[in-house]
Image (cartoon, rainbow, N blue to C red; front, side, top):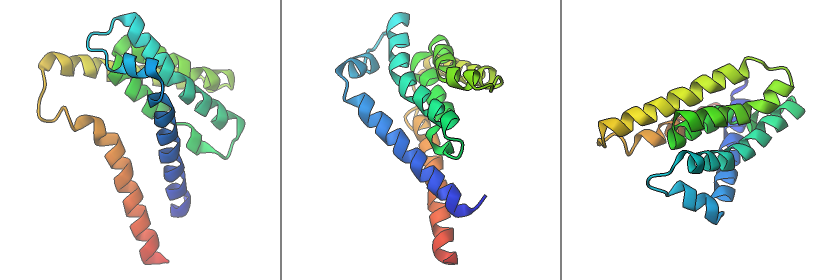
Length: 162
């Protein structure tokens, strides 16, 4: 793949994630559910539905427009849902986000997304049981910082080559 196309795709994905986050944070109900200390299963599922709907639409856009892959951030969203809500909520979010792909014949998407949601939720529960550590504050930023490092490298290569 051309490096410029990769850079453009990553920048669009970053913009899509920022737009979704901005829209979600403006909702009072979402903020209330997000900051609950001891949320029950119903409240966690409600939070996951809030998060899953925009990402479900992103998967639907990817299915509708074949050359627009940047709209699909299902993997990242399912990781987030599993970490925020636990294994059950991660599985529910995975099923919701996988529905458009299933309708369009991508049958391997559902088991893969279910595994991602369950693993993220199990890791969340394991981290909760082990207690806070100095690494727990920075572990949530790993995916975002990795994406930023890739973008910085690509920009540096483009500047040096062009």
